[in-house]
Length: 297
Length: 340
Image (cartoon, rainbow over all chains, first blue to last red; front, side, top):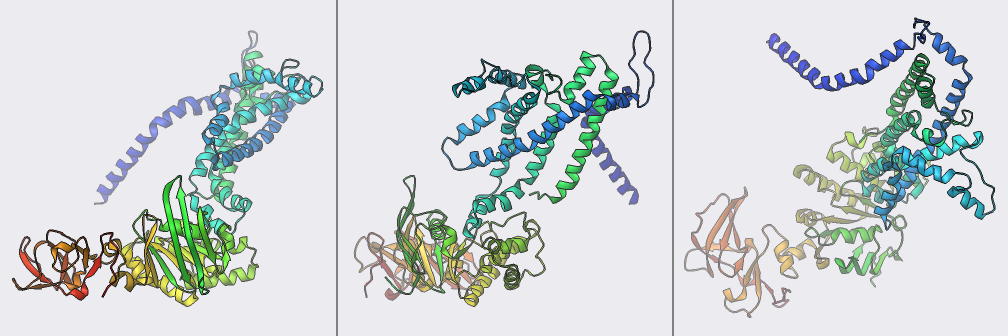
């Protein structure tokens, strides 16, 4: 009897592993192994024709921490994340609430808001290049109507990063709106009616009912926005190339530069490991802390 | 108008893009009464309730609650509470938070809030469930939370939109009694929408039967059962509903009339001594009695009740008898003829 139970249990275990294996194999080949390989190569020095690559321990990391450009890039990326994440989420929520209400041309508004998401980032960047170009650009044209001087938005260290931030928000908000829109439609109409009968104001209803019910979506979007704030650098190649004087350089762009422009793979690998570590820590905090205070339906 | 009326609807109409919603709804509701809006689905009973609640605004007519014209007022200005068919509980809030939500919004002090909540939970038997989420409750418990939320504010008028339709049959019967008792104990006025005539007939002081957006009859359950105003009421109310016969089937009635007859007034008599000879179409054993369906040209829904188990062969011919005093006569438009 006990033996049969054991066999049955083993059979279930085999089933489980069989179901897990496709994803596990793919993830191992394309995520886990590269991560470990990166970690490994970050511990070696750069091999040149004269000097072969040798194990240097944490020396590459020490170099990075001593590199002022690295700190500037980190600072840039933190500001970039601190602005793009909350602002694009707030705009997405506002647009979703509007596009979900009973208005005419609702379909048109939804499509219009979603369009930036459909565009490839490179195309979007080219579009914004046209907005930002001094003299010719739309922004300058409008400015000149009011007698404002021409501004080289992408060409000055003070404004370059902000110009990049605006493009990112423009690109992301529509995408996040779709998630909010879908979540809003799962909130039954009669909750609003029940609240109306109690005399709940719009604002209270939003704060006490809608926002808590949207929390799972918000959590999902925050994680995505955070990953994007590190991942999304396509527009840098078109708009600024990280310049002027590194003012708009983000960490992934710097990694790319390190690896493929300066051919310094070990330092690039070191930075990659640092980014991964930070992302892991933040995602863990989000899931364990916010998740506990989130209501799932 | 009538000074005692607590709620009045006068010629209220609501149309949806030209489609029929409700039309010519005129209704008086006395304070402390239990009024049921009854009818098949799509008859406009829920629309009427929503107009009363202020969730929709009528295209025509007037709604007066406690002597105040509230036709275009917001729902929250009408001093009423509502129980929704789906209960509309806030899924992320606990039972206690759900119940006090309205009080909180209205800015009731915390101590008073607490007192009222405990009382409402006591009345609905929910003590001990305060911190549960709606998702952790059974259907019956959720229903009671919805009731507790409706009564906690102490509003004099409570609207209920098919509150029992999501419960199983057994629970429905017990909650029905609870709601009726609650209404009496609290002395509140209840307007209750249902498509289930058992609910309407057993709970209501006054039943409003509707069809296709119009009121067919307003009256006590006895009025609707014993004196149906038209053929629709006759064929809707009662289980089994009233049988309808063409006047030509019987002697001594004006032409083009319909004659209504209830199953309990029909008796099977020895052959040759009855007023009609029918064939048996089906037998349905109900426990204490057996319902026997009869067929005769020019009649519909003719049935007779026999005590106990008395199944009869199908297609057997039987004679039936009934007395003139039990017949209901409807004219060619289907309206009741009030004579003799």
